[in-house]
Length: 262
Length: 262
Image (cartoon, rainbow over the protein chains, first blue to last red):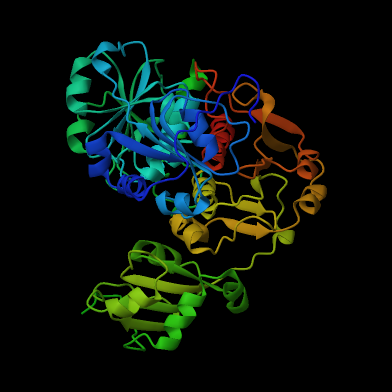
């Protein structure tokens, strides 16, 4: 039934009402926090995460279990499409859904001095957060530090929009002011409308890049800590151009420019 | 009641059932096409568009009509919040909503030879399309050419995500192959996994940049027309990094690099 080298261990043949309720409850942050788990949906995403993250429940639609590599999951369930539809957080239910354990990373043991890291100050939109994680993955940024009021990385929309980058980028929720205080010799970059042109300003291969809230930008307490104020120039011939770039788009332009230089 | 210099002409004091149905119907492309109109919601977006686009119906919530500048709208309606809620396409109904006429632009009269333009080959996600329009606005790209199977620019999600850039960037739906044939001397850029490093490759201040479909990329018939194959390098130390950047993010990196050079 399966390719050589793959062993699929099936433990359960249907998704119980209790499990459906449990998976549904993980739409809410309080239950994700209580159980220390989150949901990922879609075969590509789930199979991208499986080698890297501890899986509590792996749910696979009946009839698609050929050629599925075996992974460590505490429980593997073959379910009907109707059952998956009831459990799914998405408008279009997937053929594969999984509950993973949240990964706890202790950044106090990581030396960030020679790395380039991102700081997110109050990013609210879960989709923006997911896109930023994907950008960090692409540009080789290993650590993202989020203020405690930043959107939850384990929100369904964020998980889905990371496209698997979630397993490769470390996300830390912390007090940003305390973090920056620990690295008082590191440059702290931020983008502002009255900053210096990012294309011509000297940049360093290490330090922190702060990206602010979608509406309010970087909050004053954090702005004080910025050592290098940058600006992405607008090339519009129009006076009344977009006031700002979307925060994920701005993150990509900034990360691209830092990586281009070094 | 209003500031000096502003005159608010109120024609109607309630939003009729017929108008609510009409505004609701504009969720669907076929009705937008039939009436040649579209809906924009939220005071910031509506007031950004009003000076630039012909407005059929301007709906303002009762009680917020102080200090609103007067604009040419065929009909201005002060409505209750309950009426606006029924008409709105959004989960959180706004205080200002408007129906605008779609603007028809004839690009045959524009000489694109010395301009940098974007070509979108089958972009499917309305949010991505909106974000790309906002990016084009920021980077001074005046014209975007969309293949006929690209998402509709007048889709609610696209309109909302342009943040007003819709009035400053010309969007043309056309046969891309015919368009490119007219500019046979212009460089046609596209991004591919096996392209040349965009940071080091020579670029020109004019030409066309093709961005492909989210899943399938640039289709083979269009790929044949590309004269310069580019690549955005990944800086991940991980072998199994994200396969690609989101198309709007990739567009921002490409546009940023073109504009940085010149």
